Image (cartoon, rainbow, N blue to C red; front, side):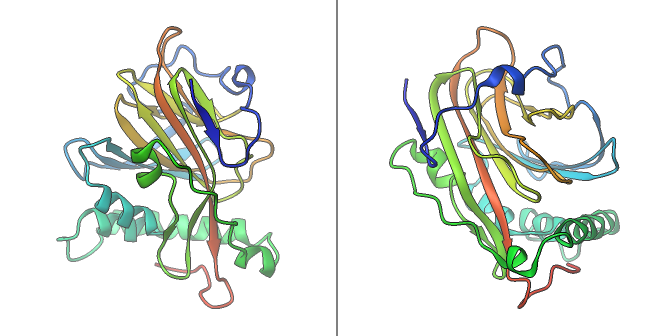
Amino acid sequence: MTARFITRGLLVTLAGALALGCGQEAAGPSGAEVLWEDAYSPTGSLVVAQDGDGRLDVLLRGKIGVDSPEVARVASAATTLADTYLALHPGVPAVPADVRALSDRLVAQRKAELAGLTPVEQAARPAPAQQPEDEAAFDAEACQSFSGGFSGYTPKYCSYQYNWHAICTYSTVATNDRSYAWNESPYAGYQTLSGMTWMPAIPAWTWQWATWGGSYTNRYACLYLDGSNTFGNVGITDHGFWTDESLHPVSGD
């Protein structure tokens, strides 16, 4: 077994973090309503869901070794749903009205969450993570900085384990952070924040990033495989959102 994580701490104890959802089906999320879903490829999808508090959450999923890493990188650098959609559909001339409406809601949600931060906090970029030296595909496709210019996501934490059942981030997930889950196994699994009821399924051999709305206290992003005797290569990240608010206010798309 090999364990490596950027912040050089002990792995989070999973018993409490994964107490929810042990009997849930792998077909879809629990505790949230899927408002919109787009299949951008035969094995890739973009999903927007609404939790019980009315906050919107976004997931982007692709098949490891199948869906283009280049397309995923461009889509991951986009910081609005509308731009993510266009990156996944480069031949589409305009964003559909329903996607635009959801994107506007997400922008307003982010603005409200950023409103409680000081200007310095809004403009702060997370310190770049020390890049790992192994697990090449995970490192190249997930543990990377994604930037669209004046805003983006920087990995604050990355961890990859061989032949493992579950994995969580060592650092707590902050408002507007994004987490990549990497399920390099023949088993379906779940991705979640500890203490949340929405646990979207992640199929076998699939990467998936999630951005959750709302504020979090002592919550960790997790991936675990369904079933008690399931093991594979798994990875997790915590990507911090940053924006140069003074130069590029977080507003419309």
